Structures are given as structure tokens and as C-alpha cells.
Length: 479
Ligand code: CS2
Image 1 (cartoon, helix red, strand yellow):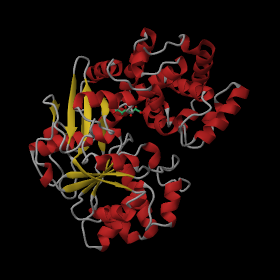
Image 2 (image 1 turned 45 degrees about the vertical axis):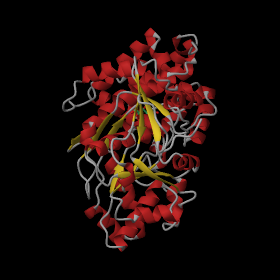
Image 3 (image 1 turned 180 degrees about the vertical axis):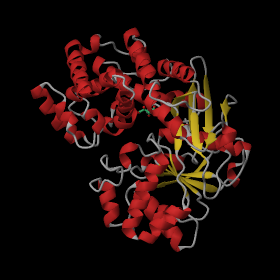
Image 4 (image 1 turned 90 degrees about the vertical axis):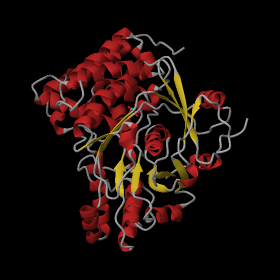
């Protein structure tokens, strides 16, 4: 079977780009060219271009991988996205990406691109851990390998913040405007977080650079949402059958997608609203809702699944007692939220229950369980703090936290950038039988939780309960 390319004759059932790709010019550089970007922002841009054509082609960048960029080039930068509803599937070939660069092979070209006036937006999905945020200060973590390297050698960056700062420095020297920095990772007030990191690093180089970025730059916050499981051989094999061509970048996702963006751009943007994106002046309520309801429940489901031997989110949702735990969790998390404009939180939760249970989406609990130290603070601990501040007991949050700790205790090869510290805490906790070693990991738990004796007792009790009953369920394997 041939590889997907611009000359592939696609079956009529496949949706194709509805604009002339040959005349599309780049306007966006996206760092972190993974499955999430391909299923989300690339799709929104594809639809926006079909509605209002303009110079908004995407150049996909990988900082750590060569393979994904080589695959992209081998396919004329085309790839497919299969969205699966409970009853049907839509297959779409996306045309909005027109270039690919790997920092491993095209370092200088990448820097030149960042300084190219045609590039007006630099967006990113690099996961929480790639930013190098110090959990104690919210600023730069000087111990983070990429941050340390990029502070030492700013003209030869390795990490996302270093590349942005060097790109902005080159633009300033060339008398250009900055590009808009569009963070699409699951961090609260993600635009502001990245703005702080970028200006801090720039200030270490030259205070005037930081001032210029602060004055002329834009860092809109965004809330992004679409469940995108990591692709497998089966994903690629099923996509090939639908396309009649091999697609190394194929992925499966759910039908649902959402994007809420602060409308603050230095030099324009694609007509993403035509594709369904919502432009607002303040993203925070939407971000908080998504982080606490979707991502918080997701993390809890992941640890339940990992402890009970359930491979997929849908398997956890198929167990009635777990499903009601998830519902309870969301109800409590919703009580910590302010009203979200235009959203009925009851309907939102109902939708989430259905999305998690979607039998056609194979989302591994292991994928979500990783990097807990980077995820739980904004997903679970922040909600717990607000719950306690409102004179409630933070019970579901103690349970979810206890699940994570129980998971860490039983998973010696946990995937987490703070894995060494967590492993050390796990061996101490195994000896003592208490979670206090985890509580002592610097910057992990907020002070308000560490000072709440009743909540800590509850956490301790929940942990003991989970360990003694093995989450209450015998392992069930996915079929
Ligand atoms: C998940 C998210 O892996 C995880 O931690 O909770 O990737 C989640 O699937 C997305 O945020 C959904 O938009």
C-alpha cells in the first residue's frame, strides 16, 4: 500500500482540505508536533482556512524527535484524523500543516523561522513538564535541564522557553514585531504562566529585551479540549483501511472538541471562530472548569484503573461503583467553581461522563497516570484548597490524592519528572505506612492542605482503606 501523499486518490468518504494547499503560506509555528496538536489546533486551522483562506499555514516543530517530522515530510505534510462517536466515525485528511522542522536536525532553520516576519503566531503543546516551572515560585526552575542549558547558552536554545526567547530577541534586533505566543497546554492561566517564564529568561539576558516583550508581546491564555489517545499499530492499520493509503501519523480521537481563547493577538490570527473556537476576554473560568472537572476526574480514573488493573478509561467507567465515584468527584469539584459564562455545569458533567465512557475511544489509564506531580496541583489540590476554604471537607479530593499515593507505592517505574523524589518518598512511606513523606516533597502540596490536620487525617484514612481493599474491586481486563 502507498504512503499518504498529495497525489493519493482518497475515497469519497474521506473529508479533504477545501482550499488550495499549493498557495497556502506559513503563518504559525507550532512547537510540540504531537497527536494532540494534530487532532485539535491543526483541525481548527484546517476548518478556518476552508472558511476564510489566508496565510496561516502551520509549520510543525518537534524539539526532541526526528521521526515525526520525517514522517510528516514523507506524506507531503498530510495526515488523517479519525473522530469516533458512539455510532459512527468521520475520517478527515488535514491540510493546514505545510512544513516540518526538528530541532535535532534543523536547529538554525528553526531559529531563522522564529525570526521570519511571516510567522505571526508561535503556539505550543509540549506538556506541563517541558516548561520548567518552579513549583515554589511559579517562575523559572533553574534546576530544569532545558532552563539551565538555555540560561547558560541563550543563542543555542534546547527548550521551549529558550527557543521563544531567542526567537523574540532576533525579531527585536531585526526591528520586527514579536509573534503572539499561544500556549495550548493544560496549565491554569497558561498564557500568563508562559509570559512570566519568557520575560524572566529574557531579563537574565537583557532587561530591555524583557521590557520590549512585556510591552509589545501577547500571550493569550487558552483552554483546549479533545481526548486523543496515543496512537497504536491498530490505529494506523484501521486508518489505512479507511484511506487506502498508509498514514504513519494517523490518530483516533473523539468527536467532541473545544477551544476557548483570549482574543489578544499581535498580528492577527486565523478565523478559528468559523471552526467553532470561542473567543473571550477571560479564559480563566473555562480553564478552571476543564482542569478540575475533566482533568481532575481523568487523573482519578487513571489511578483507579491502574490500581484495579483496568487498561482503559472506558473500562473504569463500566464499573458502577467507580462510575459513581467519578460522578461524586465531579459534583464536588463543580462546587469549587464560579459560574462559567454560557455553560451549564450539570450538562457539562453529563457530557464528560459520556465522553469518558465512549466505547470507541481506547484511552489508556497509563497515559493519563504519568507525570502526576505536574498535573495534580492544578487538577486536584487547587480544588481541595477551595473546598476547604468554603468550609467543606475536601473528602473526594483526599480520596483522589490517596489513589495517586497508592499508585506511586505500587509503581516503582513511575513516569514522572520528579520520579526520583517520589520513589524516595514511596520507600519511606512503605516503611512508615503513612503518606507524610509525600507531603514533604518540596512545592508539591499547597500550604493550605499541609496545614489542615483534619484533611491530612482523612487522606491517611483513605490511603489505608485503599491499600486494605485494593480499591474494592477485583481486577477486570479490557476485552
Ligand atoms: C489527560 C489529558 O493525559 C492527561 O492527563 O487528562 O490529556 C486530557 O485527555 C485532555 O486534556 C483532554 O482535553
